[in-house]
Image (cartoon, rainbow over all chains, first blue to last red; front, top):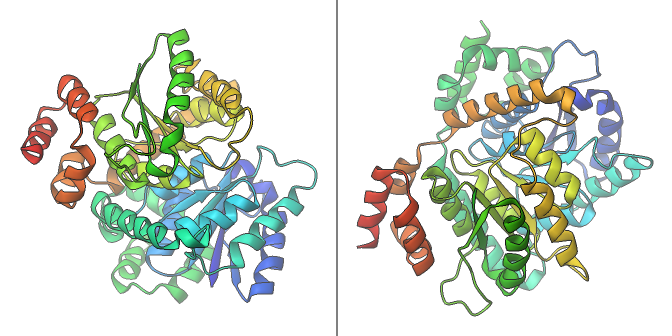
Length: 212
Length: 212
């Protein structure tokens, strides 16, 4: 699958490290990683955790990518921002058992990690284990396995409830502060990846008009 | 403040323990805890984590309560369900530093805890520390303190974004599966607390009509 890595400003300096570990694991499973930045602490295209949420909302709702890896200092802000959007289920993942259980029970399409809290010596080893457990499965197999049926039922009920509680992505893009939208998406990697891989023509046309 | 405790079916047996610890800490700070169940593993009014989300959405949007404490096995399911609703920002809280940082940085109105994962010997001691850190502050003071202004700004931007991405609660209540809604709210504690403390007349009237 195609995985977006999105870092916000406070932990932007760790983008290279996270990208390298994520690529190493993704290669093992035949997944592709696209780095949406921020690429460094002095990257001029600044992303806040709220902007990470908006980017993830666009990328997932248009199937530009299949999965998003994001985070912030504690992981909470990015998690809250991503979960504000339709068709995004973002777990907060602190260790490898979170990774396994989130994929098998909750079967979401995004994860937020703490890139400052608890991120000390050997953090890259912990990251590699987490990413390995995230990507080793296609998700939704249940944990424990004998609970797979009710767990899947609840996941589908949650999807249905969320389709009622949230607006559709095109409406959101039209109603959201247009300067905030433009300042989030107006940079090279986003434009390259989005216009090449977006599967939703209406959203594609709208985004095009915003960037003109 | 008024705090709702909401447990789902898989960890319902721990409701008494969690309620006792939460009350002990809440008493210290002059807060009130209302136990919305499930009260035990064989409680006949069953709540799934998705139903926890719906209950929290109603209780917070009508100011029936000010804060919600919930959870499930890992905390992820209840967190996802609560965050699907407007005006709900639910953190996933695993330890006391999560509690402090979530309150001071993210300033949310709900927390979801893992009541199975990592819930071993001394879990009630860990719970007490978490609840203490959650309730000792009114929230939003920043962590570290010198980051308070940008952190508050991002919180307000997230609130604004979420007000665009989600529908209003009354619309959600009208559009959601009505059997699912009724089966979630049709029990004594909810009806007593809601009809006594709900601050939204339109939602109150709608809920009344659903329960008739």
